[in-house]
Length: 244
Image (cartoon, rainbow, N blue to C red; front, side, top):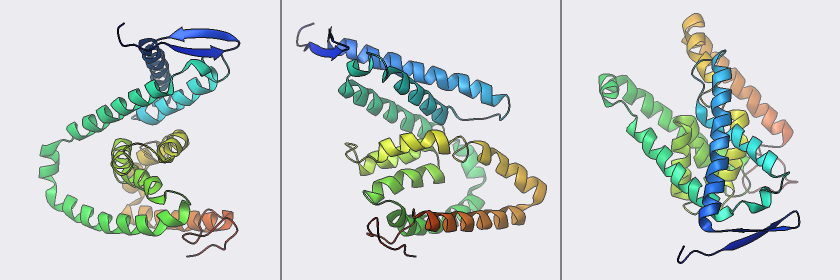
């Protein structure tokens, strides 16, 4: 291929010659394997909890694939630039698909309660964003907070879209930290088991019971974060005392 640059990687004492086309094919195959694992997990969990999202389960599949290839000769042959290129394209497609799937007639039919809910939730969430973000994240707190803000107020694709806006070149480790955290958090709260149970709790026990229970749980998490040293005064070092 004219203009193609041949790359050489060494794995296990053997020299492997591959072109950028080969590198892209290898990364696409590994990505497909991660998504396939996610589909299998979605099917199995769907037998118990219907409606489980594929996104966090595919991240678990990615972790499995990475753990496997890191122990083989394939790990050193993966081209990071090809991986970043496919990551960028996949993220753009995810964001566009999420925006295109919005049901406009449903939104217009419930516009008044939605506006009230959005106004109150926006004040609470933005205030919490600027209050909690600097106290939980030491470095690049804005990038780390914005991806969680978008995920918890909407969906994972919105959080990644906001992160892409704040950090277009992904210079911080916010995207990597989110990818490592999502397989453990998302199946429970981010559209997972807890999210599926909330409507059932509201119907069976009423909205007041759900609201009071959520406040108690939030207070317990806050106290736990203070005790474990996760919650600190903004700009405080590792040895500094926690602040409000």
